[in-house]
Structure formats: C-alpha cells, structure tokens
Length: 436
Ligand code: GCO
Ligand code: MG
Image 1 (cartoon, rainbow, N blue to C red):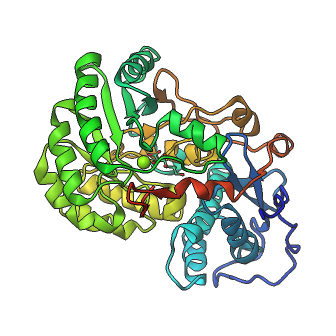
Image 2 (cartoon, rainbow, N blue to C red; image 1 turned 90 degrees about the vertical axis):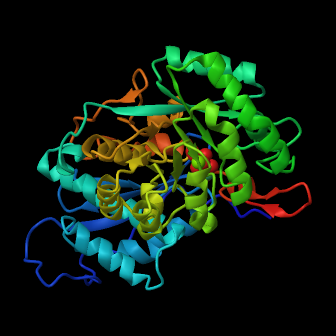
C-alpha cells in the first residue's frame, strides 16, 4: 500500500535562538544568520522535485537548492529536514566551505547519492545567497564569463530512424547544434524512447518489455550510422547507452558506431566497469562521456589521469553541490576533459541554473543537457533557464537567478513519490534484473 502523499512543506524548524549545533570558532556577533531551512516537494514536470530554501535573518534574503533524485525523494527530504537543516541554524551562510565540510562529516559514512543530494541542495542555496549578498550573478561569483553562452543539447527519440531523422532536422531548425538521439528497438525496452516512457506512464512507470542487449547491438549502431548519413555533417549527434552493456558489448558498439561520428557516446560502461574504459578507448575514436551516476568526485580521477574519457557528465546534486563539483571541473580542465552536465527534466530549474552558472564560468565546459520545461514548471520557477536557439544565455540576476513560487508549487503536488523507483525495475530477456 503506497503511503499517503507527503505534506507539500516540511515542518517549521526551531527558532534561531536554539543553540548553534555546528558553530564556527571565528563567528563574530552580528552578521547574517541562517534562521530556517525548509524543503518543498512539487511535481510540475511530472517527476518529483525536492527544493530546499535556506532562510536568513535579513528580510527577503534566502537561497534555493535542488535535491531532486526521483528515485529517493522522501529519504532525501528527511536528510535535509531532520539532519542537515538544524545544523545550519544560527550559522553565517557565507561560510560555504566550512558548512559543506561539517555537514559532509556529520554523516561520517561517506556520501552516496541520497546524502549528497540533500547536502547539495543546501550547498547551492548558500552559493545563491552569496551571489545575492554580492549583487552578482553566480557565474560572476565563480570567476566570471569564460564564454558568451552555453551550448545546449536536446533529446530526440523515435520509433524508427525516419522519425528520428525528422526530429533531428526539426531540432536543428530550432537552433540546436547538438542533439541526443535514441531510437527504439522493436520488441525490447529501449532507454530514452517516448514509446517506452508512454507505456511506463500508462503502467504507473512499470517496465513491460525486457532488455535485449543483442537486439540493441544489432539494431542501434547501424541505425545511428544511417541517421548520420541522412542528417548530414552539420549537427552533432549524441547517444546514451545508459549503462546497459557489458564491457565486451560496449567495445563492439564503439567499433560498429564509428561512422556515425558521434559527438559523444554516454554511459557505455556502468560505474562498476569503469576500469574497462581504457579498452573502450582503444576500440574506436568515438568520444566517451560518463558520470551522471558518479556520487564521488574521486570516481572521476583515474579516468582523468588516464585520459580515457572525453566528457564528464557531472551531476551537481549527486556530487554534493557546487563546492565539490567546481573543484572537479577545474581538474577536468587540467586533464583536457570537457564537462557535459546532467540536466534532463528530473533536474529542477534550480539545479539547471547551477549548471548554467558553472558552464558559463568554466573553460572546461563542453555542452549542457537541456530539458524542455513544461509551462507548469516555468510557473513554479520564475527565471528558470531556458535555451534560446539551442544555447543558454548567462543569467544577469543576482545569485542563481531562479525563484520558487510556493503557491504555484502547491498546485502541482507530488502524489506518488514511490512511483519513480519502479522505473528502474528492468529485467533482461532471461528474467535477470538488469541495470536500467
Ligand atoms: C540522461 C540520464 C537521465 C536519467 C534520469 C534518471 O542522460 O539525461 O540518463 O535520463 O535516466 O535522470 O532519473
Ligand atoms: Mg544518461
């Protein structure tokens, strides 16, 4: 039995006069103080968002962060409400590095996606406040412009090549120079194709078909080569394997897809198989992208050092916030790896605004994943970053440049927070559980 939907708002925490749980030895009296940390659940995009708001004793000064991981929504909200939020009360929000380190240490057992998403939402909110106090857009706080705009990539998927080709050309006509293409494999569950998603929605996101690696290997690489032939050389094509192949199958895929001249091939290997990237690199020249599933910046380090990947698919919420992620991005720059931050519809506009601020200010930036936000999402998040002609312009508003409309959010409640974890219940043709 699915529990009743959670309240849209977290309980109001204790007033600031409570003892400061995580004091700093240098804090002088006066200055800005955190007075409340609140979380809000909403689903204007269909998937559950967790939004954190860090409030201060300065009228109208607050910061926003995104803790949205549809697979563990209620757990993440609890980590913010019950564990991390109380440690912020009474602290100066300017002490971002100290607070990030204390809150990370407070859990003792290292990171992981649930703890990191919660911590990230507070971390990004503190960066939002820093920009607002300084009167600067976040990309200026992070070092200023390294580019005039951030190139975006949009998603295209279809039941067959003809439909994909048509949608790629339409995306190019809308100004996109980078397009992710996913093509359905008849009779098998195929990641990223609308047909599967529609079925999932109809079945409350339960999987129906099984996953057939051999059918995928036979069907998709030649289809991508033919799609390249039909769309021509002037649009960058990307494809997401979504960690569904073994290392040997991934090497076959890389060899077979060479002539599609992909901009990058994403998640050809699961995190557990990262040691095989050297072999994958040797199988062909297709650029390799990985990382949305990486919860620790240190997971990237051997791949950077060996220079066996080309793009880091950084996910700021999963990595614990802007504080660790900007350090990783600097490392990417030093090792010649570009960033391609994760940003589909289940990253909220608050999370996307943090992505774009980092994109604009980092020399290592490659391309930004872009969702098509629904009107309801744009209503809940005034100032949401939206690509124009296939590119994100920098925000010129202080901080993240995105707000959160509580009243509008209440019109789009999270009604079935456990529904999304069924999305991952994929089985292979032999009935075994398979990575989704
Ligand atoms: C991508 C990702 C997403 C994930 C989703 C999981 O490349 O955008 O693979 O589509 O599947 O974020 O919740
Ligand atoms: Mg992906």
